[in-house]
Amino acid sequence: MRATLRFPALLAVAILAFGSCKKKTDESVKAKLTGKWTVTKDAYDANANGTMDAGEITEIDTASGEYILFNSDGTGTIGLNKMNMTMYDHLPMSWTLINGDKDIAITNTLSSSTTIDTIHIESLTASDFEYSAIYNVNGSAVKSWTFTHKY
Image (cartoon, rainbow, N blue to C red; front, side, top):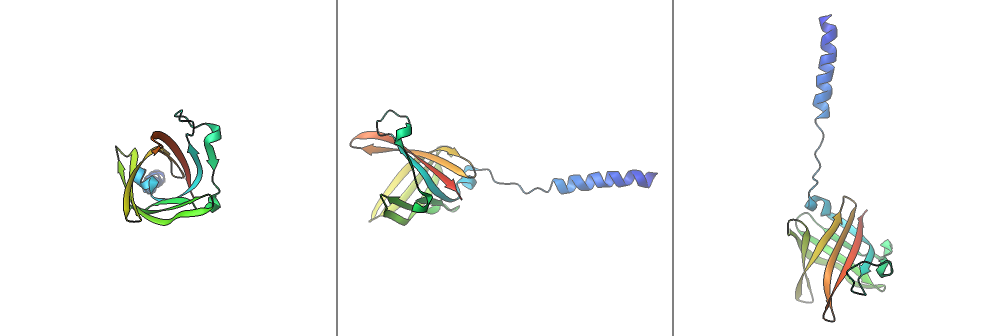
């Protein structure tokens, strides 16, 4: 009788022991951000009303090659095409999370000119990343949004 009771108890302990050996995943912003993100949509607040209107959203063909790559060491690259012209192909950059991991400071050098852009993380999951930025266009601050997907 005692051997019969011991087996279920040992089985329960074994199940608990193996069940608690789950590999923990890193859910940090940095871990989610790390990887290559393909641009799927862009939006530009053309009427400067601070809202992303349906007519201001442009679908981007994922075959266009527009992407942003965040490496875990704070480096990365940008590939940007506009109007079927490659503007940046593998443009090196560095990046840092700032403002409590709500913004990303991106530094790149193009034609011996270094720029630092700050983009705001609107939403971030393991597979989708939306960010926004404010740009100066003819003296006016204009907001843009970019939607990306990790494949």
